[in-house]
Length: 323
Image 1: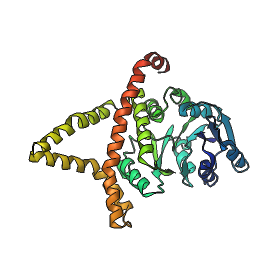
Image 2: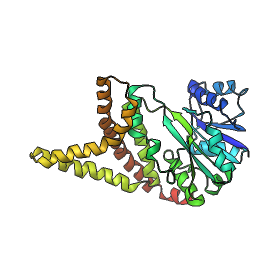
Image 3: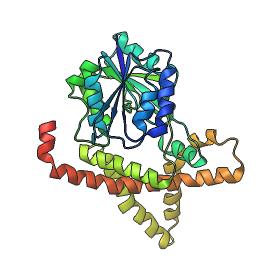
Protein backbone atom coordinates (compact mmCIF):
# COMPACT_ATOMS: atom_id res chain seq x y z
CA UNK A 1 0.00 0.00 0.00
CA UNK A 2 1.20 3.51 -0.76
CA UNK A 3 2.01 5.59 2.31
CA UNK A 4 1.80 9.38 2.40
CA UNK A 5 3.35 11.36 5.24
CA UNK A 6 1.59 14.68 5.85
CA UNK A 7 2.85 17.73 7.76
CA UNK A 8 1.61 21.28 8.35
CA UNK A 9 4.12 24.10 8.77
CA UNK A 10 4.38 27.86 9.21
CA UNK A 11 7.59 29.89 9.38
CA UNK A 12 9.74 26.95 10.43
CA UNK A 13 12.87 28.10 8.60
CA UNK A 14 15.94 26.10 9.61
CA UNK A 15 13.91 24.31 12.31
CA UNK A 16 12.29 22.07 9.67
CA UNK A 17 15.61 20.42 8.81
CA UNK A 18 15.72 17.86 11.67
CA UNK A 19 12.30 16.50 10.67
CA UNK A 20 13.28 16.26 7.00
CA UNK A 21 16.59 14.62 7.88
CA UNK A 22 14.79 12.03 10.01
CA UNK A 23 12.42 11.30 7.11
CA UNK A 24 15.43 10.65 4.87
CA UNK A 25 16.78 8.19 7.45
CA UNK A 26 13.61 6.10 7.77
CA UNK A 27 13.95 2.33 7.39
CA UNK A 28 10.88 2.55 5.17
CA UNK A 29 10.75 5.64 3.00
CA UNK A 30 7.43 7.37 2.41
CA UNK A 31 6.00 7.11 -1.09
CA UNK A 32 5.32 10.82 -0.83
CA UNK A 33 5.52 13.61 1.72
CA UNK A 34 2.80 16.22 1.44
CA UNK A 35 3.51 19.45 3.30
CA UNK A 36 0.92 22.18 3.69
CA UNK A 37 2.48 25.57 4.37
CA UNK A 38 0.14 28.05 6.01
CA UNK A 39 1.72 31.06 4.32
CA UNK A 40 5.29 31.27 5.63
CA UNK A 41 6.96 34.65 5.26
CA UNK A 42 10.49 33.46 6.04
CA UNK A 43 12.75 31.15 4.02
CA UNK A 44 10.89 27.92 4.88
CA UNK A 45 9.96 27.20 1.27
CA UNK A 46 13.57 27.65 0.19
CA UNK A 47 14.67 25.09 2.77
CA UNK A 48 12.05 22.65 1.49
CA UNK A 49 13.29 23.09 -2.07
CA UNK A 50 16.74 21.96 -0.98
CA UNK A 51 15.30 18.57 0.00
CA UNK A 52 13.39 17.80 -3.18
CA UNK A 53 16.34 15.78 -4.53
CA UNK A 54 16.31 13.65 -1.39
CA UNK A 55 12.64 13.29 -0.56
CA UNK A 56 9.41 12.91 -2.60
CA UNK A 57 8.10 16.28 -1.45
CA UNK A 58 4.82 17.80 -2.56
CA UNK A 59 4.36 21.29 -1.10
CA UNK A 60 0.99 23.03 -0.92
CA UNK A 61 0.77 26.69 0.10
CA UNK A 62 -2.50 27.72 1.76
CA UNK A 63 -2.11 31.14 3.39
CA UNK A 64 -4.07 31.54 6.61
CA UNK A 65 -4.93 27.86 7.03
CA UNK A 66 -5.15 26.64 10.61
CA UNK A 67 -3.72 23.25 11.61
CA UNK A 68 -6.92 21.31 10.86
CA UNK A 69 -7.37 22.98 7.49
CA UNK A 70 -3.73 22.36 6.62
CA UNK A 71 -3.92 18.69 7.51
CA UNK A 72 -7.13 18.24 5.53
CA UNK A 73 -5.63 19.95 2.48
CA UNK A 74 -2.53 17.79 2.68
CA UNK A 75 -4.51 14.57 3.09
CA UNK A 76 -6.88 15.47 0.25
CA UNK A 77 -3.86 15.95 -2.03
CA UNK A 78 -2.16 12.73 -0.90
CA UNK A 79 -2.26 9.70 -3.18
CA UNK A 80 -1.48 7.07 -0.54
CA UNK A 81 -4.06 4.70 0.91
CA UNK A 82 -2.34 5.12 4.29
CA UNK A 83 -1.74 8.54 5.85
CA UNK A 84 0.98 9.01 8.47
CA UNK A 85 0.72 12.36 10.24
CA UNK A 86 3.45 14.20 12.07
CA UNK A 87 4.41 17.78 12.94
CA UNK A 88 7.18 20.23 12.30
CA UNK A 89 9.52 20.49 15.27
CA UNK A 90 9.86 16.74 15.79
CA UNK A 91 12.53 14.16 15.02
CA UNK A 92 11.27 10.71 14.06
CA UNK A 93 12.90 7.50 15.21
CA UNK A 94 14.45 5.53 12.30
CA UNK A 95 11.74 2.85 12.36
CA UNK A 96 8.87 5.26 12.97
CA UNK A 97 7.10 4.89 9.64
CA UNK A 98 7.77 1.19 9.18
CA UNK A 99 6.47 0.29 12.63
CA UNK A 100 3.54 2.70 12.52
CA UNK A 101 1.98 1.49 9.27
CA UNK A 102 2.63 -2.24 9.77
CA UNK A 103 -0.64 -3.06 11.63
CA UNK A 104 -2.67 -1.11 9.07
CA UNK A 105 -1.06 -2.93 6.16
CA UNK A 106 -1.72 -6.23 7.93
CA UNK A 107 -5.43 -5.38 8.09
CA UNK A 108 -5.46 -5.34 11.90
CA UNK A 109 -6.75 -1.78 12.31
CA UNK A 110 -7.78 1.39 10.53
CA UNK A 111 -5.76 3.56 12.91
CA UNK A 112 -2.37 3.07 14.54
CA UNK A 113 -1.31 5.22 17.49
CA UNK A 114 2.34 6.20 17.60
CA UNK A 115 4.21 7.43 20.65
CA UNK A 116 6.02 10.67 21.50
CA UNK A 117 8.78 11.55 23.94
CA UNK A 118 10.42 14.81 25.03
CA UNK A 119 13.84 15.73 23.67
CA UNK A 120 14.86 18.48 26.12
CA UNK A 121 17.77 20.84 25.56
CA UNK A 122 17.80 22.64 28.94
CA UNK A 123 17.26 21.77 32.61
CA UNK A 124 13.93 23.59 32.58
CA UNK A 125 12.76 21.51 29.61
CA UNK A 126 13.75 18.32 31.45
CA UNK A 127 11.58 19.31 34.41
CA UNK A 128 8.70 20.46 32.21
CA UNK A 129 8.71 17.20 30.25
CA UNK A 130 8.70 15.13 33.43
CA UNK A 131 5.89 17.24 34.91
CA UNK A 132 3.38 17.36 32.06
CA UNK A 133 4.12 14.34 29.85
CA UNK A 134 3.29 10.71 30.65
CA UNK A 135 5.73 7.83 30.60
CA UNK A 136 4.89 4.82 28.50
CA UNK A 137 4.04 3.04 31.78
CA UNK A 138 1.38 5.69 32.53
CA UNK A 139 -0.59 4.92 29.36
CA UNK A 140 -3.36 2.36 28.85
CA UNK A 141 -2.84 1.14 25.29
CA UNK A 142 -6.52 0.39 24.68
CA UNK A 143 -7.68 3.92 25.57
CA UNK A 144 -4.72 6.03 24.45
CA UNK A 145 -5.64 8.86 22.06
CA UNK A 146 -2.63 9.73 19.90
CA UNK A 147 -1.29 13.16 19.11
CA UNK A 148 -1.22 13.90 15.40
CA UNK A 149 2.54 14.27 15.67
CA UNK A 150 2.62 10.45 15.56
CA UNK A 151 -0.41 8.66 14.10
CA UNK A 152 -1.35 6.72 10.96
CA UNK A 153 -4.76 5.91 9.49
CA UNK A 154 -6.45 4.85 6.30
CA UNK A 155 -7.33 7.75 4.07
CA UNK A 156 -10.77 6.20 3.71
CA UNK A 157 -11.18 6.38 7.51
CA UNK A 158 -10.28 10.08 7.45
CA UNK A 159 -12.95 10.66 4.80
CA UNK A 160 -15.53 8.59 6.68
CA UNK A 161 -15.38 10.84 9.75
CA UNK A 162 -15.24 14.10 7.80
CA UNK A 163 -11.56 14.82 8.37
CA UNK A 164 -10.08 17.05 11.02
CA UNK A 165 -12.57 19.58 12.48
CA UNK A 166 -11.66 22.83 10.74
CA UNK A 167 -13.57 24.97 13.22
CA UNK A 168 -11.02 23.99 15.90
CA UNK A 169 -7.53 25.47 16.12
CA UNK A 170 -6.44 23.49 19.20
CA UNK A 171 -7.44 20.04 20.54
CA UNK A 172 -8.44 19.20 16.96
CA UNK A 173 -6.54 15.92 16.98
CA UNK A 174 -8.43 14.70 20.05
CA UNK A 175 -11.79 15.36 18.41
CA UNK A 176 -10.54 13.61 15.26
CA UNK A 177 -9.34 10.64 17.36
CA UNK A 178 -12.68 10.37 19.13
CA UNK A 179 -14.59 10.31 15.85
CA UNK A 180 -12.28 7.63 14.48
CA UNK A 181 -12.62 5.50 17.60
CA UNK A 182 -16.39 5.81 17.61
CA UNK A 183 -16.51 4.73 13.96
CA UNK A 184 -13.74 2.11 13.80
CA UNK A 185 -13.18 0.91 17.36
CA UNK A 186 -9.93 0.77 19.38
CA UNK A 187 -6.64 1.72 17.78
CA UNK A 188 -3.48 -0.38 17.70
CA UNK A 189 -0.84 1.17 19.93
CA UNK A 190 2.69 1.15 18.46
CA UNK A 191 5.02 2.47 21.16
CA UNK A 192 8.12 1.89 19.03
CA UNK A 193 6.98 4.53 16.51
CA UNK A 194 8.42 7.47 18.43
CA UNK A 195 8.36 11.17 17.56
CA UNK A 196 10.80 13.19 19.67
CA UNK A 197 9.96 16.84 20.33
CA UNK A 198 11.32 19.71 22.39
CA UNK A 199 9.15 20.96 25.29
CA UNK A 200 8.49 24.68 25.70
CA UNK A 201 11.56 26.59 26.83
CA UNK A 202 10.09 28.86 29.54
CA UNK A 203 7.03 29.42 31.72
CA UNK A 204 5.58 32.11 29.45
CA UNK A 205 5.59 29.82 26.41
CA UNK A 206 4.21 26.97 28.53
CA UNK A 207 1.40 29.20 29.85
CA UNK A 208 0.44 30.23 26.33
CA UNK A 209 0.47 26.59 25.17
CA UNK A 210 -1.82 25.38 27.96
CA UNK A 211 -4.10 28.40 27.65
CA UNK A 212 -4.62 27.53 23.98
CA UNK A 213 -5.16 23.85 24.76
CA UNK A 214 -7.80 24.69 27.36
CA UNK A 215 -9.48 27.15 25.00
CA UNK A 216 -9.67 24.33 22.47
CA UNK A 217 -11.18 22.06 25.14
CA UNK A 218 -13.86 24.67 25.78
CA UNK A 219 -14.64 25.06 22.09
CA UNK A 220 -14.95 21.29 21.65
CA UNK A 221 -16.66 20.73 25.04
CA UNK A 222 -13.90 18.29 26.07
CA UNK A 223 -13.31 17.04 29.63
CA UNK A 224 -15.92 19.22 31.41
CA UNK A 225 -15.72 17.15 34.61
CA UNK A 226 -11.93 17.38 34.69
CA UNK A 227 -12.09 21.16 34.35
CA UNK A 228 -14.86 21.38 36.97
CA UNK A 229 -12.72 19.46 39.47
CA UNK A 230 -9.87 21.89 38.86
CA UNK A 231 -12.10 24.92 39.51
CA UNK A 232 -13.48 23.29 42.66
CA UNK A 233 -9.98 22.52 43.94
CA UNK A 234 -8.70 26.06 43.53
CA UNK A 235 -11.84 28.04 44.31
CA UNK A 236 -13.24 25.92 47.16
CA UNK A 237 -10.73 23.34 48.37
CA UNK A 238 -7.62 25.53 48.54
CA UNK A 239 -9.34 28.47 50.31
CA UNK A 240 -10.74 26.00 52.87
CA UNK A 241 -7.26 24.62 53.57
CA UNK A 242 -5.70 28.08 53.84
CA UNK A 243 -8.45 29.22 56.17
CA UNK A 244 -7.80 26.20 58.40
CA UNK A 245 -4.09 27.04 58.51
CA UNK A 246 -4.86 30.70 59.28
CA UNK A 247 -6.95 29.60 62.24
CA UNK A 248 -4.14 27.27 63.38
CA UNK A 249 -6.03 24.06 62.72
CA UNK A 250 -3.62 21.12 62.59
CA UNK A 251 -5.54 19.40 59.80
CA UNK A 252 -4.96 22.37 57.50
CA UNK A 253 -1.26 21.54 57.27
CA UNK A 254 -2.04 17.85 56.83
CA UNK A 255 -4.38 18.60 53.95
CA UNK A 256 -1.91 21.03 52.37
CA UNK A 257 1.07 18.70 52.45
CA UNK A 258 -1.03 15.68 51.56
CA UNK A 259 -2.52 17.48 48.57
CA UNK A 260 0.85 18.84 47.47
CA UNK A 261 2.38 15.37 47.68
CA UNK A 262 -0.40 13.83 45.62
CA UNK A 263 -0.17 16.74 43.16
CA UNK A 264 3.56 16.31 42.55
CA UNK A 265 4.28 12.64 43.27
CA UNK A 266 4.11 11.19 39.76
CA UNK A 267 6.06 14.05 38.10
CA UNK A 268 8.70 13.71 40.83
CA UNK A 269 8.99 9.98 40.17
CA UNK A 270 9.47 10.62 36.46
CA UNK A 271 11.98 13.38 37.13
CA UNK A 272 14.03 11.34 39.58
CA UNK A 273 15.33 8.95 36.95
CA UNK A 274 16.28 11.84 34.67
CA UNK A 275 18.32 13.80 37.22
CA UNK A 276 20.48 11.07 38.77
CA UNK A 277 23.67 12.78 37.51
CA UNK A 278 22.71 16.29 38.66
CA UNK A 279 24.40 17.97 41.62
CA UNK A 280 22.21 18.30 44.75
CA UNK A 281 21.49 22.06 44.33
CA UNK A 282 20.40 21.54 40.70
CA UNK A 283 18.23 18.61 41.69
CA UNK A 284 16.62 20.63 44.50
CA UNK A 285 15.80 23.45 42.07
CA UNK A 286 14.38 20.93 39.62
CA UNK A 287 12.02 19.39 42.14
CA UNK A 288 11.04 22.84 43.38
CA UNK A 289 9.92 23.72 39.86
CA UNK A 290 7.33 20.95 39.73
CA UNK A 291 4.59 22.66 41.82
CA UNK A 292 5.29 25.97 40.04
CA UNK A 293 4.84 24.36 36.62
CA UNK A 294 1.68 22.58 37.77
CA UNK A 295 0.28 25.84 39.17
CA UNK A 296 1.06 27.84 36.00
CA UNK A 297 -0.51 25.12 33.85
CA UNK A 298 -3.66 25.01 35.96
CA UNK A 299 -4.08 28.80 35.94
CA UNK A 300 -3.64 28.81 32.16
CA UNK A 301 -6.31 26.14 31.81
CA UNK A 302 -8.74 27.91 34.11
CA UNK A 303 -8.37 31.11 32.10
CA UNK A 304 -8.51 29.47 28.67
CA UNK A 305 -11.40 27.08 29.19
CA UNK A 306 -14.17 29.66 29.74
CA UNK A 307 -12.95 31.62 26.70
CA UNK A 308 -13.47 28.48 24.62
CA UNK A 309 -16.88 27.86 26.16
CA UNK A 310 -17.93 31.42 25.36
CA UNK A 311 -16.89 30.89 21.74
CA UNK A 312 -18.90 27.67 21.68
CA UNK A 313 -22.03 29.38 22.98
CA UNK A 314 -21.64 32.16 20.42
CA UNK A 315 -21.17 29.76 17.50
CA UNK A 316 -23.81 27.11 18.12
CA UNK A 317 -25.20 27.38 14.61
CA UNK A 318 -21.74 26.84 13.07
CA UNK A 319 -21.15 23.82 15.26
CA UNK A 320 -24.47 22.26 14.32
CA UNK A 321 -23.62 22.60 10.62
CA UNK A 322 -20.15 21.07 11.08
CA UNK A 323 -21.16 18.25 13.41
